[in-house]
Amino acid sequence: VHLIMEGHGPDSSAAMSAFFTLVGTHGFHVSMGLFWMLVMIIQLGVFGTSADVKRRLTYLGLFWAFLDIVWIFVFSIVYLMGAI
Image (cartoon, rainbow, N blue to C red):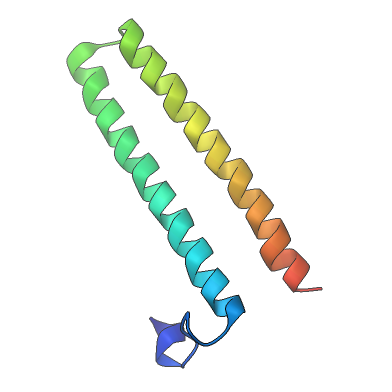
C-alpha cells in the first residue's frame, strides 16, 4: 500500500509490475501452504498417522521445500542481480 500511495504501483514500470507479481504469487503460495498445514493438523487429530495422512504429509513437505527453492532462485535472480 505504501508503494502504491507513493506512485510506485504495478502500472508505473516493468520492475514494479514484476515486483508486485512475484511478491503476490509468493504470498499466495505461502498462504496455501499454511492452510494445507492447518488441514493436515486436523487430519492428524482425526485420523491419526494412517497411510493416507503420511502420504499427504510427504506431499506437503515436498511442496514446502519446492517453494523455498523457487523463492531462493527468484530472490537471487530478481533482487540480487538487479542490485548489480
